[in-house]
Image (cartoon, rainbow, N blue to C red; front, side, top):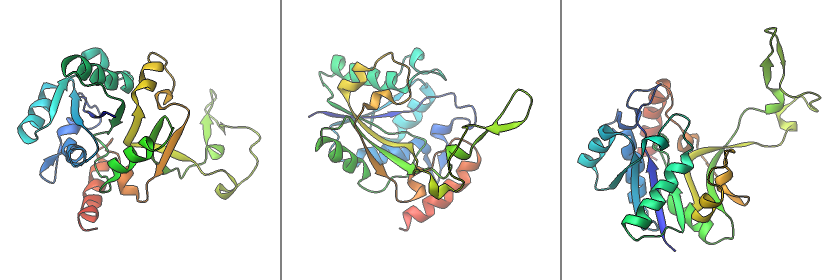
Length: 238
């Protein structure tokens, strides 16, 4: 079974300028994910996919990882991430004669992973008949308690006729954190062009619930960086 690791690193971040190459404790943000990926014993190949020459140059000077240029049509704000994954798969099939059976997608802006977590997720998928295996975190919010602001500017319930008043009365909820997603390549092809959330994961999805919030910490806003510094100190000494 051929396993391809893909780290998408798009340029043009709006909330945090040059986010993926932002220097965090002496290395670019994307470097944390690259190092985790390169420590995997199960991935046959690892590639960074980027539309940015600037990101490519920084990474090329720091890491021995293959870099492919992502076409502009797959690097827009509203471009489905699965298209960039398929581009990487098809590039390796055409240019490297490497047919990926499984794709491991690792988001660069979720930089802290437990040692061995990538291979754990790969093993869980490969030893099953599931379509994918993903990391996720418990959600502290209950959708039943959420509100909308209507056209009159008034708060109204998102859901009507909610039964229950305490979080403990509602089912436990989980959010995909983007740290590690392992999926069978066939499902990427089957669902190509269908715009529906996470459809490329298939119907049978194995969850890995993150035991610590640091493993799900996403860099999306400037405030997230300060918390990352704190988490990295804890991670390095754990």
